[in-house]
Image 1 (spheres, one colour):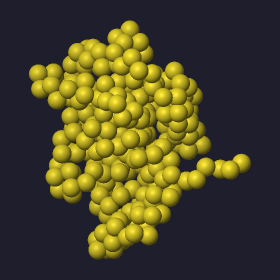
Image 2 (cartoon, rainbow, N blue to C red):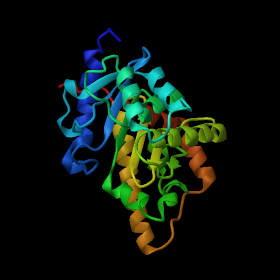
Image 3 (cartoon, rainbow, N blue to C red):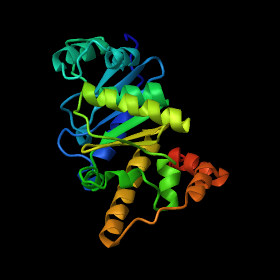
Length: 264
């Protein structure tokens, strides 16, 4: 990993991280959450442990070998709760064992990149979403769609992963659920819900990651209001299927994900 990370990718990751870490957004507090980007050379940048998204700088990120992180997840002899051995493997994956410690959730990012083809990933803990993820109504988040733009931005099939302890246990739980999701639907999710924990947004651009996160919050707030009144009236499955494949909606999704630069 001697080749330096591109400054453009790092700067985009810093910008995204600060947007997600803005206190007004209520997506994370303190050291919560992490972001990453695939550098397309077998490595990715991910937030270092203990750093804050809202105060991100170039030094807030660690470069890791994707294959090395995946190897740790898949190494069956490594106990899911052996955090000492896991930490050693994660530090080796950075190529600089004495450097900054990568986030314990770097495994989520490696999985999103390797198994789902994501180029940008954001893991946050939105209060509005966690209110449902920490309740007995969490499954309602993936039971259907409440409005069309939820389909367009968050995708047809979100994934819900029941609670697993952060670290290798969570990484393996997400890996196993992703395998089932890919087998069932033939395509990766754009949004992963983690029981009693938070969300993971997967996308092709940093703007798209932010939009998926924002729309998941709107959907959660809407669902909370619906549950206070009665039962959710989800969109018909056939309508959600059409929305997810309609050329005009796919075009809108692409344009929103990669807006033209401001000429000013």
